[in-house]
Each structure stands twice: as structure tokens, then as C-alpha cells.
Image 1 (cartoon, helix red, strand yellow):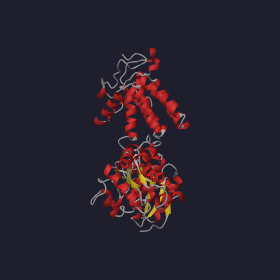
Image 2 (tube, rainbow, N blue to C red):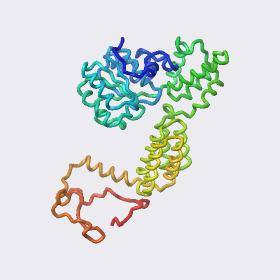
Image 3 (cartoon, rainbow, N blue to C red):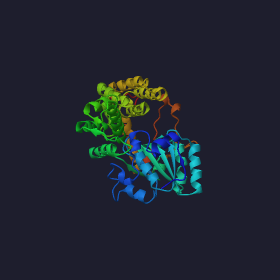
Image 4 (cartoon, rainbow, N blue to C red):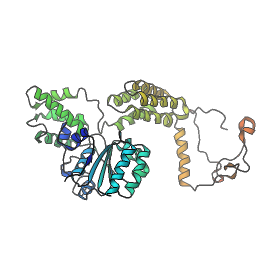
Length: 418
């Protein structure tokens, strides 16, 4: 089926919509039955299969690690419908472009597909622009993201979209991709590959189909250079020398690595923390994203035990944000070493979670009269008393005596809590 128009940069059209460019684009499937992996979504009655067969009846977000097939699924959806297909990058688009798409959709409600790559990169006000037209069904949105949409997408937008999680490809899926590459007329024709070379390609790809195919194509080109169409283990080793540290899908994905970093910081192991930081940075992780997790650790696991940790983590975040790599590695290393060696306390997170639990599970008790705005009757102004302290109740009467803050011996608290 054809589409009336496709609003997409020319260089992206080549990569996404034609069988040109790198190997992953040349052998990209056109039918849902040709998609490799994602058996939990693609089967005779799979949710993605039905969604495509029913002409894309609702909006979705495809969430998964790199190389799990998010863009491929969007392209298969495009080829299966007569609806207009528009591509936007979440990292590069702006509100005016989004409004232009919305106006276009209003002319033919329900006849436009908007694919937003890296949808987590949209700012909150950009996401808010999409809410009303999605609510009335003016267009279908396909979003793709490597970040958890339950966190990176606003609740309002999330409630209007079905999230489908894609999983890293399994060994059998990777084997199918290699066979497709060898047999596809636009793949690596007449190529032969040794079994140990194939096994190394698969194991080094960690479930990332894109990485597998890029490495396979590079190995194929190296073999051709030597007038030999056989890929052996030595060639694959040579290809992997400069790519083995790249972050791919499970079991060595960004989420696992950053979790190891935070747990090492919490466990006060500076050597392990430095190693996981190095793995992340060498693997191409965004230093700003890494800095965010360090930032969280400073308040979640150190908190009141050393308030300076939050300042150092904040400075490292802004350093990474404004300078980037390779300079960011130094500030991040400084923050990691300081946090790993700092005393630990989770009092802040325990205290707020206890208070939040009461707020969520108990009635919304009224604010005591003397604490209300506009000069509540009976309020005692602390600065009118010695040491700016005076006995009075600040909690609702139903919660008098409740203790949310229970500092431990590691908390560095200024003043008298008695």
C-alpha cells in the first residue's frame, strides 16, 4: 500500500523507507510475519499482529533496548496502511512542528500516523500539545523509546497510549538474522560464515540486532577485501576490537550497568563504582543520564549523613550537561569517588515515604486553624521567642505525636531535635 505523503528528512527517508544504506536497512522486513523476535507481541493473535491487521486502531509506545526492532515495527506499520505517515525526532522537533502535524490531522481525522522517534526527548510542554488531538482521535501516535515510558513520559500522555515492551533478541532470533543476511539479495550474497565466527557475533551482540548486523557487514567487507567470502573467527575478533564495550541490550544493557554503579556507591566500594562508571562511559552512555543516577544516589543513599554529597553530585550533573565527554568523565569520577567514600544514610527517603504513605492511606485531614493563611488565629510566631522556638502543634490533630523523621547516628543534623 502507498502513502500520500511522508514528512521526513531526505537522509532519513533513505535509511528508513528504502533498501539502501547499511545492512540493517537493506534487509528490513516489510511484513509483520517477517519480523524476528518479540514472540510475546507477534504471533497469530499477538497484540502487535492484531494492531497492524486492524489498521492501527490506537496509539502505542514501543519501549525497548537498542536493536530490538522499534523502528522496524513502525516501518512495517507504515507499509501496511494507506494512512499518511509523518516522522519526527523527539530530539530535534519543536512545538511549531507538532502543531503543524496536528493541523494536518484535523483535516482528515484518524487518517494520519505520527511516528516520534525517541519520544522521551520531548519536553513536558511538547507532550502536552499532543493530549487533546490524541483524546479525540485525530491521529495515531507511534512512539519509540529506550527509556522507561512510565517515568520519561508524562502521566497524561501515558494514559492515552498503550505501552508495548520489546525484549532483547534471543540466540535463535540472531541466527535467523544472519541467515536472512546471507540469503537476502541485498544482504551479504554468497557469504559463508564459520560456526565459531557466528557464535562470537551473536554472543557479542547481547540481543541487539542492529549491532549484530553492523558487525556482520563489517566482517563481510573485510572478507571481500581479501578476496574471500568466508567469515572466520579471526575476522570477527578484528571487527569487535573497537566495539566490544558498546552498550547493547540485556544482559549488559544501560539499565543493568547503571544499577551496578548505584549499588556500588551504596555499598561504599569506590573501585567497583569507578569500573561501572567507566563501562558506561566507554559504552557510549549519555553522561547526563549517568549523572542523574549519581544525583539520585547522593540524596537517596547518603542524604543527611553528608549534605555536601548532594552539592558535589549537582555540580557533576551540570558539568556533564554543559561540557559533555570527554571532560565530563573527570567530574563524574570525582562525584563517584566522593559518594562511594561518604557515610551512608537513607533517612531522607524512609522519612518521606512514611509521610507519603499516611497521605495516601488516610483522609486529607484539615489544616489546623492556627496554621492557615491570612493570619490563622492562635499562631505563635517562632522568631518572637527565645532561640526562635515555641511549643505548638504543626500536624493535624489526628496525627499529633506521629514521627516521620527518625534520624540515626550517621545523620549530621544541625540543632536540637529534642
